[in-house]
Length: 302
Image 1: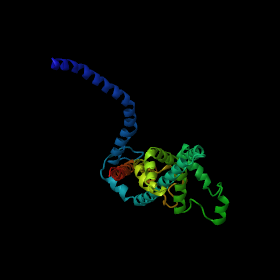
Image 2: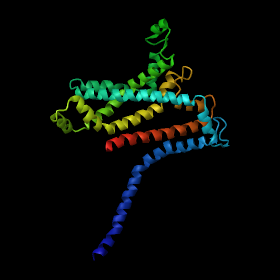
Image 3: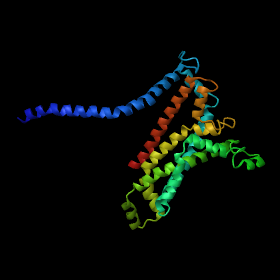
Image 4: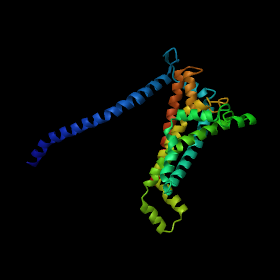
């Protein structure tokens, strides 16, 4: 009797489950379509380009794997671009994470000026990166910038030396993104239960000990997110260097993405080599991010 009743109810449950599944697919279909059109299709096209002879103006000529990858790696600026991109990524990541955490601690502790400080630090994040780059291009200009007279009298231009161009761009990125990383850090700090700090105070821990042994370990998920975002964004840097330095002086600030753009639309005009470089960068990003997440999450689990 019970078995017969259960069997009779199964079709009803199956139809309900099927309806829920269809409803879920309907909810997910706009996002799936968006990802497919703007990510999967371009990814397939880039991989296809990397495997063939594909000049910019002549179209597809045939498959030539692995010639494009060999040409990309053998390019005279490939290793220099990687070296500079790594240096820029390390500098930007250390400064953004460190300053973001410092500002988050400041606005969390401050009570009187909390709202004003949060708004002031976050305002630059509302400006587009290209617009911010143009703003700083005028700031660094030896003709129209506020330091024009000093640069003319000293004979030094901020963007005229490799070191000056690098740190001028890092300063732009720090100004533009520190407020955003401060907000992420602040969310992580506010997620830490107050009872943990109370227990640390009862145990006699100083503020430094509390920060090192309570705050930092509990902030590990936030650090994982911010470091992955910062490293990925820095490795894919393009707008700021394209607007400020054009890769100069003497290709000393050429990033990997700039080199990719140059191969595709300047100089060689070869989409195949640019596609090969794109695939190399994608693989490097996946490996780096997986390694970062394994290290950070491994520490969190332990």
